[in-house]
Length: 283
Ligand SMILES: Cc1ncc(C[n+]2csc(CCOP(=O)(O)OP(=O)(O)O)c2C)c(N)n1
Ligand SMILES: [Mg+2]
Image (cartoon, rainbow, N blue to C red; front, top):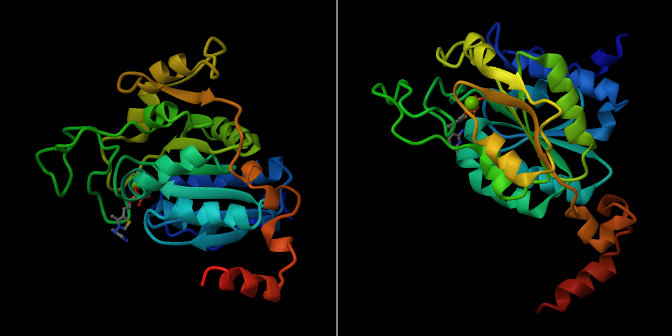
């Protein structure tokens, strides 16, 4: 058996040519490349076409409510910090409905990798403007163009001192594999925003549109220079940078909770008497 097949779940119901396919395939490369086993992993998602990715993967999975990917992922990480926790979300799910959770997850810095399938549209609900839709882009619900300014997720993350911030592109799968590996190996909260063409509902930000604009950051970019990272994160339009925009070392959420530093919570002995005594103390 091909080792990648170990991670194959249900058959995807995405549209043919969907930019989610290369992300799914890249993830299998990442897992085999890092010698991970399905039982080492938890894939957590919310609602959206992107949110279906865990169904199409063989691993531990949790598909929760729209926008609530990060609270669930954080809870799982705190319950068993030996697991590699990967949160999967869409631009609507994570930057819209779940935007508040994103801000506070970045502040807490759990060792979680967040993959955002950024197709600049609400795909599952058939093409409304999302927080990353460029201003003026027409959609079914705003035929004269989106009236809101777009949210820049990378600039937001750098401004919050997020411990790892990167941008990948579904059209550059091998490069994406390397970025996701770095994100997983990075100790702390890692955001990988992935440009993901939606071939059915986004006829503007197509493979061709992204292909003409993306470029890879070179050696001259120092991801540890926060001001330079912020400057790069603002670049959007004619040229769109791919790669690790920003990275810093920092204390993770788990490292600050002494009770789980030695033994994961899930393996800690449970004493009913002690639990009852603790509850009684609050009466
Ligand atoms: C609380 C709540 N609000 C709204 C919805 C409807 N809804 C489902 S998915 C979605 C947006 C999906 O867009 P995105 O997160 O970008 O995912 P994509 O399908 O593009 O991958 C919305 C608004 C919902 N399911 N639950
Ligand atoms: Mg989307």
